[in-house]
Length: 322
Picture 1 (cartoon, rainbow, N blue to C red):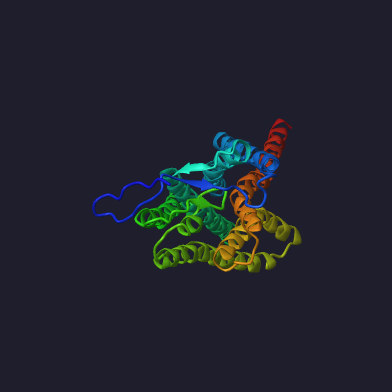
Picture 2: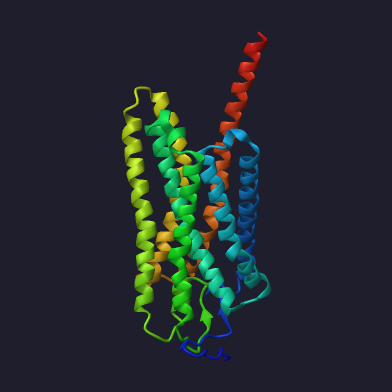
């Protein structure tokens, strides 16, 4: 196979390209398996684009919750588009080869924007905490400037934490094998092709996982613990149901992201007896289900709010005419 020459002062050598297998064990079925994946990708594209358009054009939705949701929709579009077109090309056109630098770029986008998505869910949990526990001060605490700073902070964390992945991998020598038993390039799969000690890389990967996902899960759990205590203390059952309703969609989205993400993370490191096909399928769903699921869940919620606003305006107009 062909390797690039090492540059002076750089001991690394890397292949010109890698081979993405797709779904090991389902090679003969990949053509048909691609159709539901394609449908999910189309739903993600249409749903998130529509959600962004609605939020941008409707002034009643220019609130912290929906500004965060617009950021989440943008992140979902980047995540799904960074993997799905190449994946469909593998399944339908047997285009298994991916250029080395394109693989590193894909690796960067997947991990960076997965971190951003997790951070945005944490920010949205904080928004629900402020809205339910301090309703009179919600607009003064979460101003557009604060929302922008939270979004920028989440983005910078993803970019800065994940950038070393690509740098460290690019400085290491690769083994002759260039086959990645996956449908896309991700850190652990690429790292298995390195012919060198990868303990530092693996340790840094664990640090990023725990410092990002671990921190976000703790903040989300604490926020919802306080929210639950506050809601149960409300005197009216109707008020309790209304408060729970504002959080239900967010909790569903959190579960849709973290369950496959944690399964993928744990099986990569400890699930050596998990069949490869199961691992790969969960890895695909991890990057495809949340982008498809989020606009459906939040789209229903957005429509309910818009309907209430329209009904309120109609009642006011009828009262004025009367």
